Amino acid sequence: MSTYTQICYHLVFCTKSRRKTLIKNNRDKLFYYLIGFINAKKCFIYQINGVEDHIHVLVEINPTISLSAFVKDFKLAASHFIRNEKLFPDFNGWQKGYGAFTVSHKSISYVANYIANQEEHHRKKSSRDEFIGFLRENNIVFEDRYIE
Image 1 (cartoon, rainbow, N blue to C red):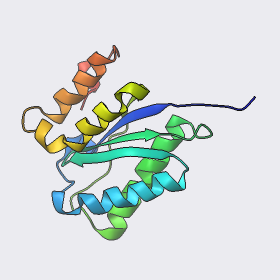
Image 2 (image 1 turned 90 degrees about the vertical axis):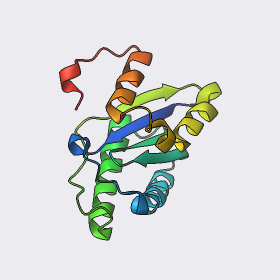
Image 3 (image 1 turned 135 degrees about the vertical axis):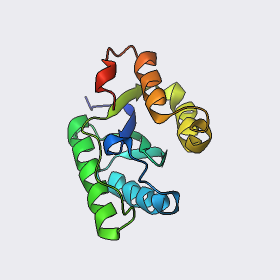
């Protein structure tokens, strides 16, 4: 028998201390680079987008790669590209943690659309409030003091 999987993740990465360093003009360059990174890992990307202090990625990770290894490599690659290309002069890294939420196949288009419209969402809600909402929606127990 073969192995079959469909494990889709909605990943959220915040800049260190949620500093608003990911300036709009250069975000597309970062996203195109990260799409190439994801494809090279033999993963499938549905959507990537973000605002000044965080990015969202909707991705199916190749089953031979652990989630933690993917996130580690993703953050390292993004940081390296940002520094080498001097995309965001005030960027000083990513927060240590991240958010990873599984997405059912039925919900992929909804989540992809949500990610595509990040700027609109953040006119009404801060990234911190958005993240806390994801935690609550997914019944993840957390302590407020650990949410930067």
